[in-house]
Image 1 (cartoon, helix red, strand yellow):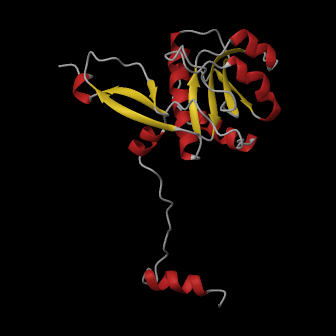
Image 2 (cartoon, rainbow, N blue to C red; image 1 turned 30 degrees about the horizontal axis):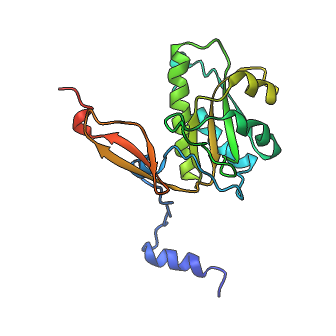
Image 3 (cartoon, rainbow, N blue to C red; image 1 turned 90 degrees about the vertical axis):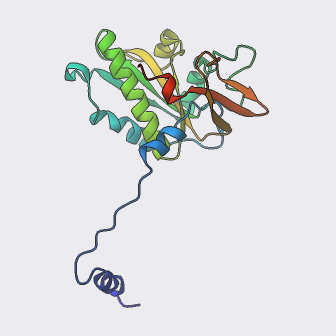
Length: 211
């Protein structure tokens, strides 16, 4: 094959004009639908530090109250996760079950810390950051779970953190099925499991719009 074979083909297709190939990205709806709180992970797969830094990188593009940009991020992978796993509680609505089950824990995480004293504006920034990172994780083929119940004092000690942990984004390769179940206003919104499937009740559009 000639060295310039592909170049000539592109010229033929573009009528002599430069042809720009654009990568196809999933729509926002697709990312939102796929970005679920995963509580069961494949222990054989571990995201590396580079992948975690790609996820943290979304924070350089996000809005921030008063542009303080006060959140700080600690990627955790490898052997460090052994100390972190017992501190992540991921199934508050299922008190009768051990969530995650042994051997199904996340294999990496990002600890989000406060760079200044926590206030309502930082809490808003925290929500924006966590969900944006979860969307990026989905885009990269990972599953995630935003974990607020993470024993901040013990987590700080385990990782020798100078700053106070606020929340954790658990990460890994998902191992399980998650189904969004539309429900009517007034029905229970607690997630539940049935025959190995994790069900997440979601209100309909007409029930969340004020009239």
